[in-house]
Image (cartoon, rainbow, N blue to C red; front, side, top):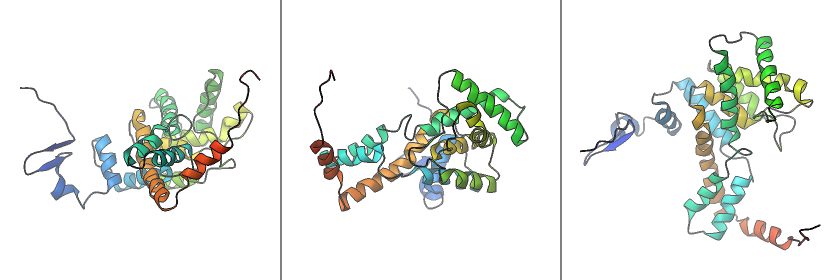
Length: 261
């Protein structure tokens, strides 16, 4: 008889177990959702300090106004109000290299540099700056963008970035990924010739990497956060709809142009 091993959830006629715990006796009312989400991926219960940083990331990424993900969710709901799951999925599917996906891209970029350093990690800002300068230079020479730099709205500085760094510092979790990210912010102008802000999605990736979460899954945490924001967008679409106005605005201003012009 085949068996299918899992360390997550199992159930019997009279019991549900999750993470080796009795769901109703040990988890419900005892564990917050953010704590549980961390536990499900890391396979260990996070400390209170880790929970604070992790949940700060989720809050930072939950909503950012009328982004393409929110607009996609609202317009899908306009088209198919009978499919809430379709509207949520439409918004989540838009999480990529420009929106939300930067969290994973930045975490992976930083982690590759930190991993190459091995146990020989810098101990001063000056040393981190040298590492960051080399990483930014090599990235530019390879014809790639440095993830986590720039923001379409917060051109003078993303307000989420210093707050998350401060929270991590307060909890003793400002590790090598965050320190490298901060160094990138200090030195990138020397290579790129212009100053760009460290964006919130990038700092979230750095913070999650410092928590020891798999960098290959960091986009999933961004999507987890944005799912809550999208549900809020859809709830507001029901109360105060704008989807039809958005659709009509685009439709009424569509103008044919000769494809050869």
